[in-house]
Length: 302
Figure 1 (cartoon, helix red, strand yellow):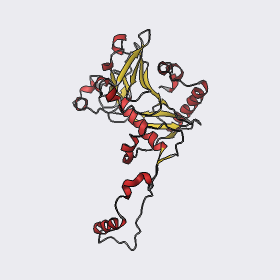
Figure 2: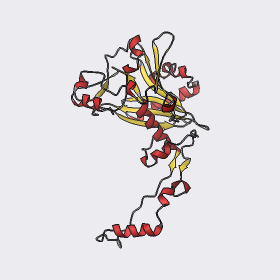
Figure 3: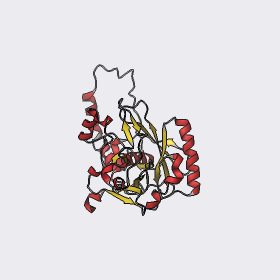
Figure 4: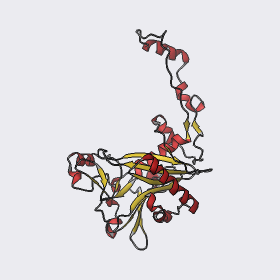
């Protein structure tokens, strides 16, 4: 959601029963403008809100297009109810499988420890007996290393907190869901992705068809990768992964209002995510309002 159109664009998430109250909107606009001044991004977007049992998380996305080969740099920022944004930490892939199994709601306490390193939840690291560990160390030790003069430097392990889980969930939703109408962005001859200034919007019929929306990410399918490599993407706006090819089939739901001009494309895999577009206009965007829990049972429900 463009921060300069925040108030008007909120009518799109209103269609799924999500909104921001007046106080939230005012504080959020001020905080995002401050973030835009300090970070020097080409564009700052309000990405969405994750509801917690005690406090909520507000998310922002910073984009830099200039000088980036084929895709802009994305940086995510988070804030709790005090509306002071900080950059999300990097993902710790070591706990990816465990994070995917989390079903409890977020609390809103970023420092809360979810996986205690060395505790009962880290049993895998304790399986090898101490004697075997020492024996393995001796076998792999470099005989030329000066162990007397140089002390071994160890980085202390870091607990996995709710903020780490938030960083993983936000990037997972972004990878699986973030989408734009076909034609909203273009690839320049220097392979720099830019917004398409000539985009006037999809017509009413096109806007209601899922095939006319594409992921806002580096292509993952071989077909689109080859398409870009050959240079054909410079002359064709449909060069990113299309939503209608996503698996499982039926993971997207498309809705129009009574006027047939305001369209929302909603994810069933991550309930609360939507891409929106007003037909015959350059108004489009995306946002997420939800609890941050993936609908992993979707393949069995379709």
